Amino acid sequence: MAPEDLVGRRSAVSRRIAALAFALVLAAMLARVLTLPLPAPHWFAELGVGVFALVYTVTVIRFLDRGWMRGDVVVILRGTVASLVAGTVVALAAGYLDSIAILASLAFTAILVNTPPAARARAVAARSVLVLGGFSLLWLLWHLGDVPTLLVVIGLMVATQLVALAQIKGVGAAAESDRLRSSAHGVAAERVGTAIDVLGVTRAVLETSRASFPLTTHAAVLLYDVSADRLRPLPLYLGPTGVRSLDGDSLDFTMSPGEGLSGRVFASSRPMLWPTAYDVSTAQTNLGEQVREQMLGLHRGVALCAVGAPMIVDDEVIGVYMLTSHRRELAWSEEDVPVVSALAGEAARAIERARRYERELDQAHLDSITGLANHRQLTRTLDQEVARAKRRTTTLGVVFCDLDRFKTVNDTFGHAAGDRVLTILAEVFHASLRREDSAARYGGDEFVCVLPGADHAEASAVGLRISNSFELRVREDPELSGAGVTISCGVAIFPDDADDVDRLLQHADAAMREVKESRHAGINEQGRGR
View 1: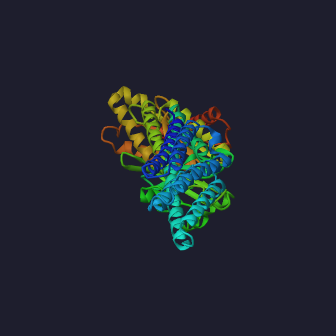
View 2: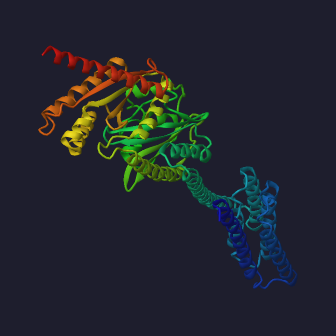
View 3: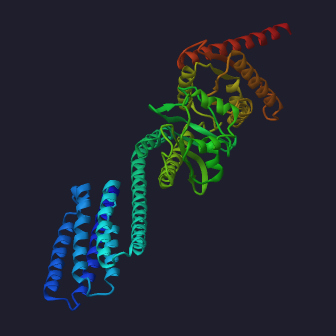
């Protein structure tokens, strides 16, 4: 059964129980009154009122599910009829029962408490005034002049009604929270179920944010980078116009644990709510200057409300799910926090599945000897980096490397020695490249390094560093010192040398061959000199 149907069913059952409760109170009053030594006309009148009350109650219960039963006029009319029935029972028994005031107070209190929870405030107020007015009239007929006691009784009746309404509203809010949580689970599970990569999962989660909370203006998913001890936003975020790319907006800010809203949620490992603009502003006082400037550059205005929850997998916080609203304060309440936590949990599990899938996919795209990316993975990386460089209008460096005399090493020293050469080169790459750089095995003895943001001078320096470090380690290796293996590196820069992946690789390959020919020419010149 759908969550909405379940909540509707429970609500209908609750309304029927409330109507039956009032009927039981009235039946108890009639049972007591009918045992009194009433005159025959009074006794039969009381019995007639009882039959009418029974028919009326059955009719009301039958039509409780109809929408018009919750209209203002019907709500007021139901209170009026119930008051007339109770007042008639009391009036006919007046003078024959000393405790009639107690029974009347209980009956009219039951009428007040039985106010439909979905009724509008003005209907509830009008109904209450009519019910209390009828009760006051009866009271003054029994106890002429006892106004102070009447006021005390009315105060107790109103207090009881307010407590009942508060409890009903609380139960309704809890039911709505359960409905939203179940709906959020269902929507999130449906949307992320078909996503197999992290970005696909992120897009599905962000779109669910707007669907679950229409007042959301911005939402983001930040993952914790253990090596840098920073929270890094994923490349997608939700803005007023929908899901956007951080790369497309030239945004790349990170936060440390405890910094800003996201950092506080991560550090506390629990969901947090900032209901007003003052709360949000106070929580962001420790933002770093760089992050603050980037956020101001977005021209979002003032965040009026925010809520966030940690993303937890196997008792470990892997990131934070954040929502903010620039439309109004109190966009979220404490009742919404469990729903946000549910979405964060769904996002955490989905992202962890996607990351595991991507790790397995990457393993399939790694060279078995060097552990570097293979040709297919290199092509994917270059496509992504060229697209990112175009969006950011930045440069991209490519270093094309080719081993010299590698075939001779295999033929002379054996394939084990050749594998040793490849292992040394992979270690050199790891030591020479930045964290954001990558290296791949392009072919048998050809390798490519991808350097985001590098210009020609920086890429050339990387190529020289790789060449010097590799050749030094080979000379110092006992098994390879006499092999004479070297490496030639050529450089190409996007967009200066080429504006697409294929021509960029061709340009770098041509530059590498020029270096190789120059080196061979130098070696031949030295041989003729000797």
